[in-house]
Length: 186
Length: 225
Image (cartoon, rainbow over all chains, first blue to last red; front, top):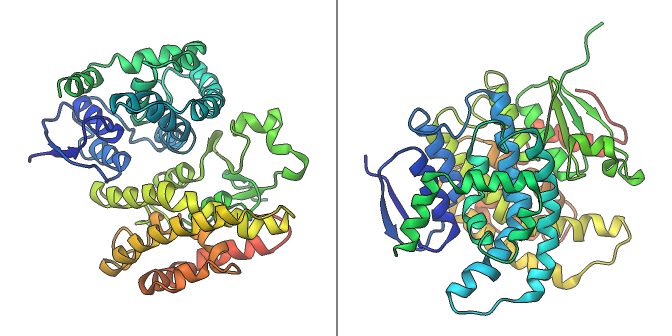
């Protein structure tokens, strides 16, 4: 059964889907397009439908999965608003040859910091956000994280020791490195 | 004497996020205790509360000593843990059903919720709290919500509910914000002027579980299920 991913190389959403497919060791074909579909629903489907292939990204135990659900929501509702605005200003705009709006950065950086204070407490209790194993809750952060760690706001992450360690673990995953290499080769 | 229900929900039923969790628990026939949080006195920002909800918001939730937050996550957990009781198809019974429900849950969380929650605040809460309404914010978010409801109108012409032909968590997640907007604000018209959206709203809001949540929102003191 052929898996095809439609999307735009630099967009955050397809990167999320690729990292999940790579973790599962699944073959797929990339079809360049504007991705409108909801990438987080797609990754959850892949994680469930291929639950016995590659890296487990969800849990069948409701108590364990509960924490994965919580931190997936936190990523969507709390982390993503400032992170995606900062990624746009500091990451994507420069690729497109447009200048950064410093006012937006000044406004969003403290918002991101507040969220990461909560992450710092959580990551002192467990290695990953959903518990002691990696899950979708962690992977969903990768696309924006990858841009932000190459920008001036990396200090917001690096100044929090547990957050900093967690960033290092997840950015180093071979499945994600492959995604970055694919993007860089376009 | 019966032991108190292990499931605890903290927060006022008037909160849209609390209402979302209550609706799910009622659909799944899960017994629960509803515990008040005195937000007027800043209880939600105190250290004891922050231990169970680190962002200082409602709801907080506890089941058999695990503490959860984020209403959509809590609802999914309830559906998983209590899969064999109440409405069994609420969160789907196979990966494809779950994916379709997830997709519309994402649409609710990321497309419907932002403009509708601004409008709920501006039109339903701000007047009660004697806060001046922001006309520009209202206009802007009305226009955004209209575009979202255009997508829903098309979708609901293809299927009875958002994720398919059965009521699911995806529909339920829209109930709290829509309840405020359709009852007593002039943006009700955004829903009632769209034939399929109106049909869908009438069906989902007449569910017994939702009527019970609305009753809880109207009664002044917290009740235990």
